[in-house]
Amino acid sequence: MEHKIKIEKTARYFTYGNPETAKNIWFVLHGYSQLPAYFIRKFHQLDPDQNFIVVPEGIHRFYRKGSSGRVGASWMTKEARLDDIEDNHNFLNQLADTILKEHSFKQRFLLGFSQGGATASRWHNSGNYNADHFILWASVFPEDISIEDGKSGMLTSNNFFVLGNEDQFFQGKMDAIKQYFEEQVFETKMRYFEGDHDIHVPTLLSIAEECNA
Image (cartoon, rainbow, N blue to C red; front, side, top):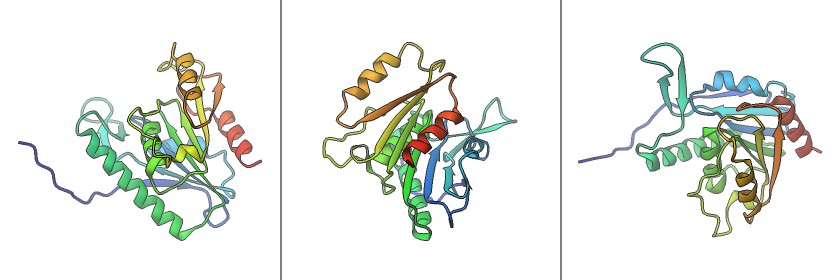
């Protein structure tokens, strides 16, 4: 018989930029098997005096190959899926609440890459961060999200979907994805770049510039 208890767990997050001068805060959720200490480097070309980058780490770590060597992190698996969704939600809510109590920012960005996109979408839908700009990057929009109550974050944010034209996980699916977003009640801007499953820095900077215009 399965049983559950609530425990305390130490969660990590990494930052880049100066929160005292930044007018923008970015919460960035990494993909499967990545570590935020390395993933955050993709965002180092954003002006650190104007942008404060926060990269939480998925609360599950594992060896990427075998039982030793490089380590990666994950947000969830299919096992105890709903528990992981709730734990991720609580972690991100607590982290955002802590940071936003200490600092104020003109604009709030939320970017979810790959596996982190699903977690970011769920959090944006009903969390406490209230992003002004939501960027779903090389990720699917979770089908379990409901926006029927009219309270979803996607209804009030500036939304982007970003994808490389050579992304191995989306080959043959681009038309279906475009049609999916066109059918939603919230508006999503599509952005494509020459490349694969990665953060394309010129595209990132272009979106940041557009949002700050």
